[in-house]
Length: 338
Image (cartoon, rainbow, N blue to C red; front, side):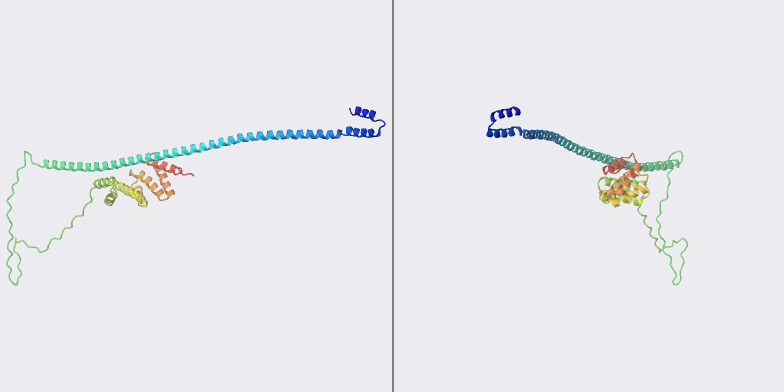
């Protein structure tokens, strides 16, 4: 095309200098633009590539935005799930706590009922002791009556015994004494004694039977007359220190001190039960309440040892169940870790 154009220009401009110059100029214009067209083509390609790259970046940004939106939704769902799980855990913990408190209340109620039964048994034992004593008295009376019947003469009723009527005794007048001479009383004359007999000491008042004392003290304790009951239980301990009911008396004294908040005195009386009356039925509950008193005094280690000792000595007792529940509520293992 360029060659054809040049030929045409030469034909029309031959012999004409102006036209020749113009032709040369046009030839330069039409022949030289090829590098300009090449540069424009590269620019167009570059712009195309840039546009393609921008489109790719835009698509990538849109894809990232979509993925970020999905991730935000997943994170929100995960957060909601965690919150629901946390609420469920709190609800479950509250339910477990309520159940544990209810269980502890039931155990305490059962323990109180068992303690009431033990108290009733103690009272029945006291009554049986009195009945046994009455039976022994009746048997003694029957034996004495049998002995009197055997001593009666054979063949009928005993002959009446006649006794002579009592004569009034008149004291004889004192014998006349010769002045200046001491006379001796005649034979058969009673000698008047001016020495008064020494007063006989009154026998010390004996303590009431231990069964009666214990029954009265237990009745006052059940009626919440704690001051009177403490005095009566103290009499039992003072008059009958080796009697099994003395162990029960120490226990009830400890119980009254425990309810009044006098934990040190309560622990001392519980120790008397545990040390002096190891076979008493009050030993398990004494272990339990001693441990609780130690915990109330913030002596945690000693209280835990006492509760563990109870569980070890009486594993199947209701008191051991209470001790396990107490330790579990405190987050302390029942058995020590080695």
